[in-house]
Length: 153
Image (cartoon, rainbow, N blue to C red; front, side, top):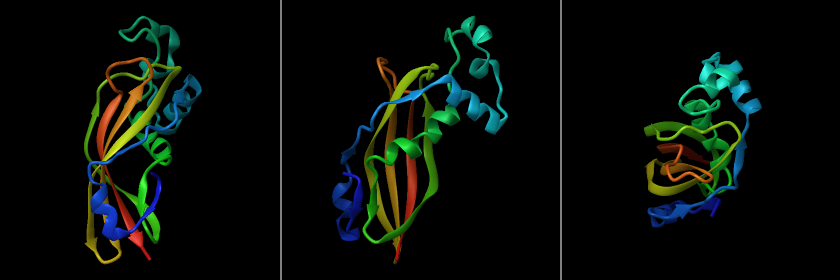
């Protein structure tokens, strides 16, 4: 369902499930690169030997890495107001990290359109309820309410 939607039809999409995205591998190289950028080198993310002795049995992705992957995963199916010249992150109303993403795991996202509001002429606020699933796991990696603001030209 990705793509432009007339502003006057956005409300009709509230409650619509979008996705899922394709599966994406979260490998150790991606985790290490994220650790380098954020300077978060906690052993559970980057030290395979120490992490193997911990509760997860291996290294795990940073929660914020998993959250940041919403941008990539959501790009496969997110809607946008017709005529939008740009969409920006407006924030999150709720984020919960529910299960660790072990190095080498595959994840995918799905979302539900929770709201679509024209804030003022030329601006549309979209609220999505996102879940990132981990292949083979019952508990999702995270759930989040993500807000994007579309500027219509």
